[in-house]
Length: 248
Image (cartoon, rainbow, N blue to C red; front, side, top):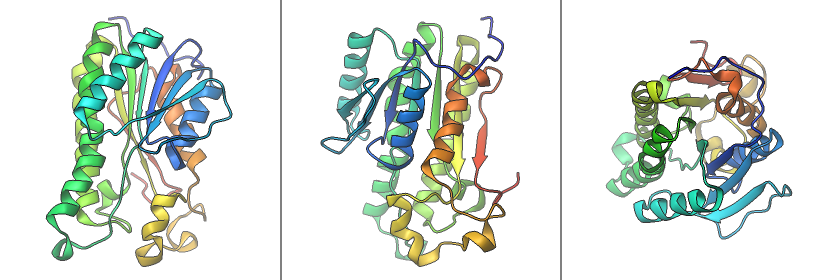
């Protein structure tokens, strides 16, 4: 396959699916992709989500369900005839240490954070490979690279597995034009982060060289870059977006 040279970050004519898009990073990402010209299907387990853009459609979808995954993918392909971009933002977090963690907690972390990536990727990867390619971006975490920030071991393990999975997909898909990468945020001010921030969060001034926590838009713009033609010679990367907390 002739891999195109990198080009401006426009997504006109492309169809994107974003999971975990009812709020936080997922919602900011859906908006950023739509503003760059994509037609976006935003999904989450919430009954509804509000988007001002007519380029964004919302669909209730539980990423932990293989059956729902097959149905959603089939619906998108039937309605739009293509799916060029898959962004995986659905996630949940826990802070309990290893000795206090439960089997239920581990299953929940792995179901949402890992299988919530595996299910849609397993379904759409062969479609992208057959149809000439596409771009897949999963939300990882700085926690997977440094052993946690305010999160527990189950979250760290699940996100580490996501990092490895995307590298596998990148290697397998390269010759078919399928790109796969990870954006690994540091602490970002979202509802999910706020559930653990009072327990073990670092001081923004003391731990983040750029002096503040991240905002969803900081991560969304990095995801947009990896979804766009601007990154046509980048695949299999873990892009750190953390205000300088980790300089790798």
